Amino acid sequence: MFLLIGAGPRVKEIGESQTMICPACGRFSRMTPYVERSELRLFFIPVFKWKKRYLAVAGCCGETFLLDPEVGRAIENGEPATINETNLEFLSEPPVLCEHCKKPVDTTHKYCPHCGKEI
Ligand SMILES: [Zn+2]
Ligand SMILES: [Zn+2]
Image 1: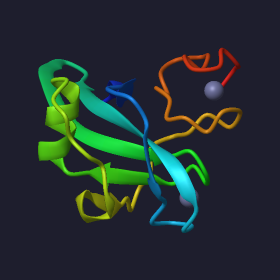
Image 2: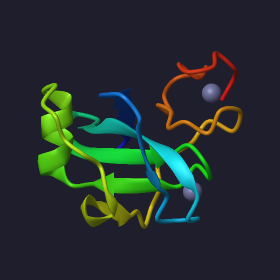
Image 3: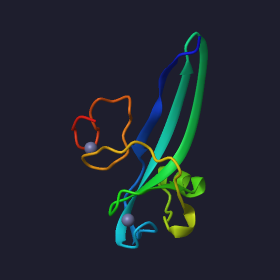
């Protein structure tokens, strides 16, 4: 018997928003970089699997992009890095966004860490 417990992405803002033209809707907008860590635990088997990816969320339309890991890592380390169209990729399966503030949220939380409303 396999039971998934504690699965779900944890998302954290890693730097300042950057202004650029949104590749999704074409408006001049702000991109906020995030890092997402996924945790997978199998019941009875102490397996911890960590996946890490960088994301950028557009302030205009809420579209989520996959951010180039090189750029994401640099931003996370506080190094100067520019988010632009060439290091953003459309995400096939977007993370869960808070329906109130449209920011990515940890689905294991009951309340949005950004706006405090119930998810
Ligand atoms: Zn947009
Ligand atoms: Zn929210």
